[in-house]
Length: 360
Picture (cartoon, rainbow, N blue to C red):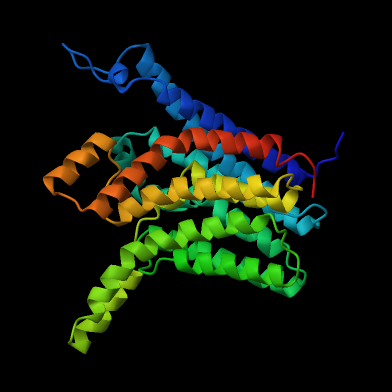
């Protein structure tokens, strides 16, 4: 039997949990929407289908919290020292505490929180809870930092990551006006390029990292570059530069970095670091498909539209409400949203069964 290191076991567990989450999401897709809508005459949510949907949704939320808590264990390279392993344990414990605090707050009524004077605690826990949503990119960045050969470079990269996490929490809490998404992406790319130049980055990791960087940067560019161009057209310099700064540094939602698809991109990159990838072509194809499934809805949202089905898109195009290009973007976003769940299940199953078979 193959001897797996703790990092291998943790990553396999995370992929198994992601596969279970995808399976539950597939179950939700099989339940018609009409079966869970409130029925007359009382218009209350009731019946077995509604209870199944409620239970499956709760289970998916709990699985995401479990993945975020276990994921730091996959960051240290096999054979790392006690410091890396202790840091992984501390990170898992911190995420677990945040998750428990989020669950506790979500089960309390607003009146109870006011009576306990827990408003500051609620803001702090919700701000820290943002870490759970982007646990994948954070753990992947830490994993790349731990693979730097120089001890000083490792410590500097981990310190920079810790500072950026604190800055992101402060931004989420409203204490800092500067978002840290661009800095986190720059750190991830810098570490990847450094490892690549030192021949320490597996070739199988490149498609996953390129896909993640594309998903991270492209929706921001689509949303911000038109605003930046409009700011540059202002003739008055006293108004031009403040408008440009607001366009570039305004807080933009990063919803496209949340959910199972970006997380699976990070898990794929971690799998390529910890395991020997059996099929390079399938590896790159999986990364590309996952990136497209997450990127197309994000681009549609960045353009100010929502994903609609073919009939609704045709009606909007026929009435002249949208242009042909916008209609195509809306339709592609709908296709990506529709295929995202089965694609997640297939990629998670492939990674678990094939991509985590032999330690690298």
